[in-house]
Length: 116
Ligand SMILES: [Zn+2]
Ligand SMILES: [Zn+2]
Image 1: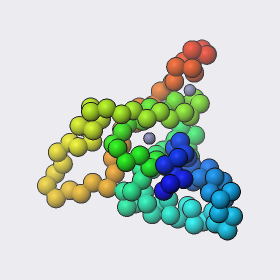
Image 2: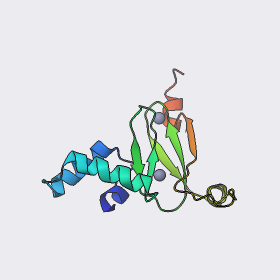
Image 3: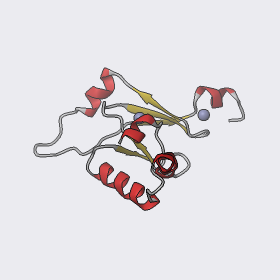
């Protein structure tokens, strides 16, 4: 969890590479399994990515993401608006494990660099 909180929306592989330096005995399978379990339990969120990889986010404060479809950069967006949307009244008895808002598009740098 700690490693995840320090990283910027890592993929399981990226997180594994980071952890491996500190815990050489750690297996890749363990990292994948734990991440997947945490995500299923709603402790962390699972994000899709423009390149098809799965990224993880330990952000506890509800937030939205703006992701660039070209370079894959993900930015966090915080604000009362997002918290409000994420706290939308749900059907009675509905338990939320996770929720997410994603904006997909081009980041400023990519948009500026032209060619569509
Ligand atoms: Zn970009
Ligand atoms: Zn995030």
